[in-house]
Image 1: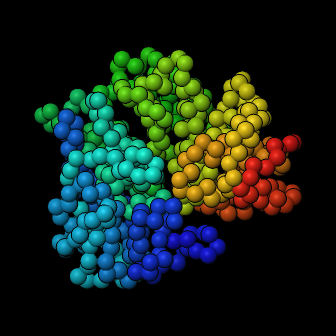
Image 2 (image 1 turned 60 degrees about the vertical axis):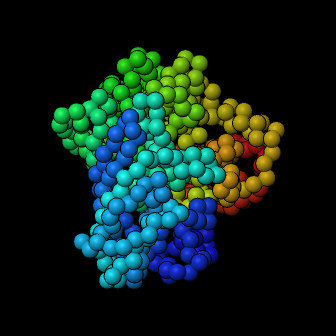
Image 3 (image 1 turned 90 degrees about the vertical axis):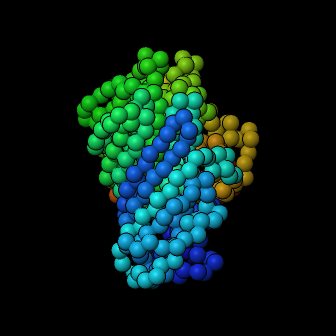
Amino acid sequence: MPGKSGRIARLSPVLGNPADIIDDYLPDNGNLGYRVSRYDLALQYKVTANRLSGVATITATASSHLKRLQLDLATSMTVARVAVNGERLRYTHRRGKLAVTLTTPVPPGGALSIVVRYAGNPRPIRGRWGEVGWEELDSGSLCANQPNGAPSWFPCDDHPISKASYRIAITTDSPFHVVANGVLAEKRTKAAQTTWVFEQAEPMTTYLASIQIGRYETVKLATTPVPVDLVAPRSLRLAAKARFAPQVEMLAVFTEMFGPYPFPRYTAVVTEDPLEIPLEAQGFSTFGANHCEPASDAERLVAHELAHQWFGNSVTLSRWRDIWLHEGFACYAEWLWSERSGGRTAAQWAEHYYAKLAATPISRPLADPGPDHMFDDWVYKRGALTLHALRLRIGDDAFFALLRHWTEKHRYGSVSTEDFTTLAADHSNEALTDLWRAWLHAPELPPFPLG
């Protein structure tokens, strides 16, 4: 939970205190008293009926004396049974919370094995950010979870600081192709059904867990040093290959700039349906058919989503107010790719977007934009401008050394703005307090940074 310093408290909170919320931007999401280490999801999905049934086995450790535990799960899912440590228990399921009272309390450090059997017709969760979560397509489905859509399809501790490994096994109709997080460990077909089993070993937060189902084919774009695949409908294969081929070179460039790619492989999924914006997940990204069109700005978006594998997926915010640590970094990666690939330089993009921000001034601090505005475009652009200002202040060598140090030190971890500013001090010969005050904490837009 947030402490007085603004950092996530590392001590176990006291259960039952109304002040014990995980995140003031999403006060109804996340749970206290335990930490999840693994999700094992055994799912069945009927595409035409949009019917999902599943058994979720959640391995966790109590962080306090636990008499009662809660999980996040949308009420569109109906729970049939809950067991904890082998004992079937009574439960309540209201307002997106599955609550279980333990007959035998679990002490701090005690092991928890939570098994939930459930089923329903999954649908997106409606909130201030629109509809997020499991979504039907014309022929298949996708998951767009950010920031609180994961409970639309599985019970979880839905907060980004709660990272775990995953096993996702999903059985669906054989004509359909499935993409999920991690590495495909097994695929078996029986009659008209195929089961796909994915292992996600690297810790992953819930909003990045994702399953995409469609009539897809796979095109291998690269096999080394990291396998890069394109998954698309047959009708879009040629157009998609032309639009997404640059991501192989992007991965090489970003590895040089940001450090080793943090996952075993990378995949771009292209749906038959148009999508307003691409969707990020750990190990893959999802684009719409419209992003294959020649007039689209797909290359910029491909760079943005790929950069999230470092900034957002491996190194993940601890609290949603620090969303600039994801979106500002991914936006700046767009400018860096443009600079490296012969387009506009990062400095030119900075001037371009600074003029746009200055023309429509927004008086709100980047480091705490408020929940209603955390996905506004100005957060992305001011975040990128903040990094550009830092680059000009400390120089290219120190700046890129800082980015590599950041992704190495916090690989698969959770971070805050204070973590970044503290690390940046180690890469600067002068104090950066004035820069952070102006770009992160002052509501008004600072003057344009000059080298």
